[in-house]
Image (cartoon, rainbow, N blue to C red; front, top):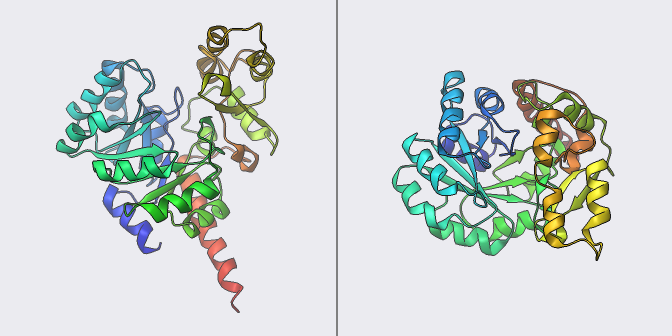
Length: 317
């Protein structure tokens, strides 16, 4: 590992500079514990959980591992105030945030010794988070699955790493050693993956979801929700086709469009509903070819990274 990678691992108490994304309905205690036990940073998604639901999930994780982990708080959640308190009460070591500005909570979190690592989609946001005391930021490009920003990882990442002194974790479109090395070359200290962990053995999503990821190719995802201001990347399906057909239909109101998406992710994750489910997945699904344990995924990523470094080094010979 290079110096930046070692610094990030030392900061968080992890062995490999690989974060697991905070995927709603997906990132539960089982997956997060599996990633943390394997040496990465496992993450529980607070999503729309209330405080007690999150507390129960944290306690489940702690029954499985004593390694560092994170809780991801979506700042669009109606329970954000509750879960912001629970992470302090439960002495969660690391909080990642998404879909908003966590500044209102950061002073209290930092006072409780929590390391705050926001997901950002712009240089301005990254600089603001650094000033507020963030330990690091996650620069996520539009190649990612789920809610996305307007910039690509390839362009956003080097601009962010040039703008801040704190560690930057790259996210969006990374699923193998080639992407890992590219992120490091662009200044990242580590990476975050969501899509590849969808097919981890410890991931409890429906098998239909995993099969769709494993069968995906480079043209398999679509972005919907631009009309609502909250674009989402997911695998093409009956749901996304119906949504896309209605999104810009002048006879369909914005409220009706928003209602189309209610419960769709849950139907995909829990029920494997191929007609009504929204299978949020990044473009990197085309690189995911098999189910593995979290330990195997992290080992494969680190080994593949070393292989790619060797290939680059051979160019000089």
